[in-house]
Image: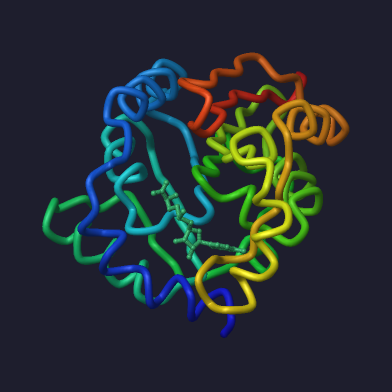
Length: 206
Ligand SMILES: C[S@@+](CC[C@H](N)C(=O)[O-])C[C@H]1O[C@@H](n2cnc3c(N)ncnc32)[C@H](O)[C@@H]1O
C-alpha cells in the first residue's frame, strides 16, 4: 500500500476523532497565534483535514495548505466552504514535490508530519529556503524513540502490514540537531508530557 493510500483510508476516521490532548493543542495554537500578523503568507504541509489552517486563517493574509491524501483535502475543502473561509488554498500535494519560491513565506506549519517523512532533512531544507529571513517554522513531531523504545523494531513490520504509516523514529535531541543543521535557531521547545509530540518554534536567522 502506498503512503497516500494509507492516509486516504484513515481520513474519515481522522476527521471524526477528537484532538488527543485539547489543552496541549490550544497551547500550541496560542503560541503560534502570538506570532501571526495580518500581512503574513503561510504554508502548511501535511495539513490533514485542515483544522489548524482554518483556525489561523482569520489572523493572516493567506495560507497555502497541502496534503498528499486526496480524501484529507476533500474534507478540508468541505470544512472551508462550510466556514466561509476564503483565504486558505487547500491543494493535493506532497512536501517532496511542491514548488515553493525562495524567501517567499513568513511562516511554515508542519504539524504531526516530520516523523512521517522518509527524508525529513530534505523537507526541512526546503522549508528553510522558502522562508523569508526571520520567518518561523512551527512543528509538532512525535519523537518516537523517546516515547516507545520498541517502536524502532515494530515500525517497519507495521508499515509492511499496512497497519502503520512510514515512521522516522527519532529522539528529541536528534530533531533539534536536524533543525539546527539546516540553519534554524530553535526558539521554543515544549514537550507537554512524556507520551506527547514535541512542539517547536524554529526561526530562520535574519
Ligand atoms: C498525522 S496526520 C496530521 C494532520 C494534521 N497536520 C494534524 O495535525 O491533524 C499526517 C498527515 O500528513 C499527510 N502526509 C504524510 N506524508 C506526507 C507528505 N510527504 N507530503 C504531504 N502530506 C503528507 C498525511 O496524508 C496526513 O494527512
